[in-house]
Amino acid sequence: MDFIGFKAYEFAFKDAYFLETFKNIFRYVIIAVPLSIIVPLLLALLLNIDQKGSKAFTAIYYLPGLVSAIAASAIFSSLLDPSFGVVNQLLRELGILTGESTIKWLQDDKLAMPVIAVLNIWMGAGGNMVIYLAALKGVPKELMEASTIDGANKVQTFFKVTVPLLRPTTFFILTMSIIGSFQLYDQVLMLTNGNHGTATPVFYIYNMAFGTDGFVGVASAMAVILFFVIMVVTLVMQKFTKETY
Amino acid sequence: MENVVQNKKSRKSQTVKKVVVYVVMIVIALIMIFPFYWQIIISFRTRDAITSGNLSLLPSALTLDNYKEVLKGTFIVLCFAEEVDIAIKEYAVVDSKYGKIYAFETDGYGNYNLMDDANVPSLLSLPYLDYCEPNDEIYLNTRNFIFSEDNKYYYKGKFADGVGSPHTPENYIWHIAIVMRILTSVDQEEKRKYYQILLDTDAEKGFMHEGFNKDNPKEYTREWFAWANTLFALATFDIYSNV
Image (tube, rainbow over all chains, first blue to last red):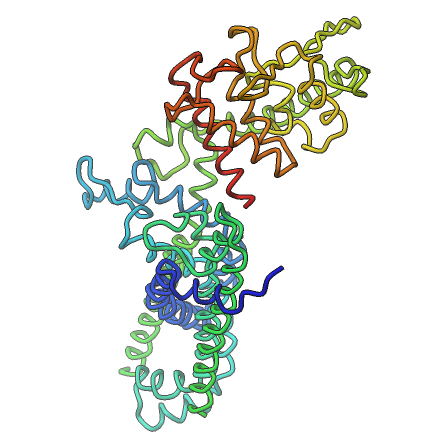
């Protein structure tokens, strides 16, 4: 057995495809992360309105989160099939698609990553929604009343009272969804097999180690690099969180 | 009087608000549930109905065929596989000077044809076909038998040694059989040796053939044999994934 020092790291940093996977993840993050805050927040606000049946709807919205990523990806790949997928058929019915034209949701360099982001929003919105709901219940009624008495309208109350009080929750969800983004794997494997600009670092590392190449050393180096990237991102996020308090 | 009107108005707006909230909630719920719903619906539809391009969101043209197929297929196939396996262990394992080996053919009355043919499926390819592990004892005994003079289709010449077939001239070794030897071997040396033989016996055509003369690879059958070429690619994968 030979000790090769940093050769594997050198190889990893020179591997253009590996660096490309971080670009791919960035494209995913800028879509998925804002949506994974906005969508659950809107859902939580809706369910926070005291009304009969809210609990049943909470359960329904949470349902997709219970499905395994592989099963959910299988469902989406059948929904999004270019020729007989129900999404394209609906678009054709509505006249948005005409004749033989189709949208190749998963075989398009521009669309594939956003589609995966949407799939993850569908799956993850319920979980984050529950967290937001709990946080919303924790907003003291007195503060809302006080702002109303001071003459603030509902929109002002929301942005000046509710949003600041939700900040710790928002930062928690933000951090978790960014870390989660770096771990994206199952959906990519099932939907695109890493094609069309969807190869993620984890996906690439897995193939590097256990695919036909079998470069376990280089893959391990890449995994360590990924660990440091996630650590740096998390530390930066933490700093942000501390600064706001 | 004015107060009562005001009250009525606000009660009305309360109801409107309630209805709007419910509508929004239901629409979102439908979006959340739709993928599940659709998956369940198409599990009750025939393949033709799914791929026809006629969109019907409501349950229609439903059939239980897919479920029948799943239950029928797996159960019967598994039973049959089990039966075949028992039959092989019972009737097709023979005692020989190599120990217990698999027979190439048997009639179940105690008569055996001990040999191996180059073509796949063959006894040599059993681990490749996932019948047994490459280090299975009976298989290893069979392998020793296959690569011995006792197998009448085993030829050893100046350029190569390997298995031939009743379908090609005598002394013709098959490339497919050599690839199988590589794919089923657990010995890296053996793999490399026979991979080199593959490279050296292509009659400088750059392609695999069906069979070639053990003493002169320039004499061969089938100039173009896609299967042999494909298996050569597999052997290449095998060699380089173990480097």
